[in-house]
Length: 136
Image 1 (cartoon, one colour):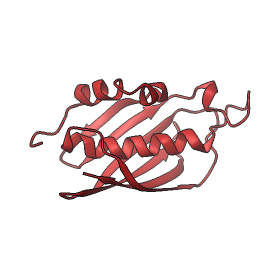
Image 2 (cartoon, rainbow, N blue to C red):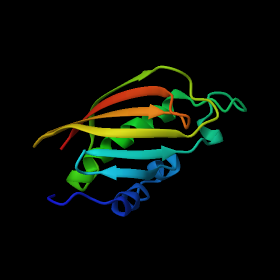
Image 3 (tube, rainbow, N blue to C red):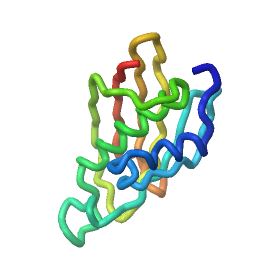
């Protein structure tokens, strides 16, 4: 793919997957020149660690990190990519907040792509970071 996807194209792709659609991700910023994509994820009761706590479970956060990293590369490749390797580090709990996730392309090779994702709460505190490798 030669021309990077724009925000509306990426949002249309997000809606094609029932699971990704369930995450409720929306693109809030996109900068192809910086190879950066920002998405917001709203809190949902289904994401709670324990009912009524408004604290995010780590599983949905990890899924969101994987998806945002994937779509940072999708912006240039034009299709979803399978994850080869994935890691996440959690720094503090996410409580009663949406997540603001910034994906940055670290490598976009012929066969492999790597993306880093920073996850912040709505006040700007860093909650987690992730890195994933994808098959191009």
